[in-house]
Length: 100
Image (cartoon, rainbow, N blue to C red; front, side, top):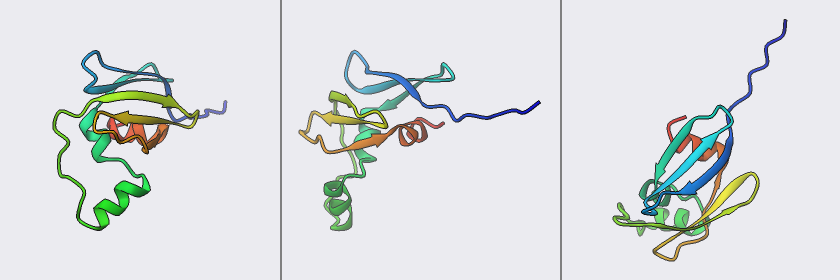
């Protein structure tokens, strides 16, 4: 008997009612959540990467909200209430941010 292990991936997602959290469901039927502030602080787009390099990236994004979520297939493009909309979060990265 051969056993194949498959890593979980994101199957469904939505912003919480207060827009402060990304709620994620996985292929293993796990219900996970990632705070919007953690997502914003974890953005790896070129703009945020450069801001970190230059020492201009904020330490906090208190009160940040998720304003839009676009599904790119391999990941999510998440827009935030501060106007930032460049971040693409690959699904494995989202799961790592949720502690999976």
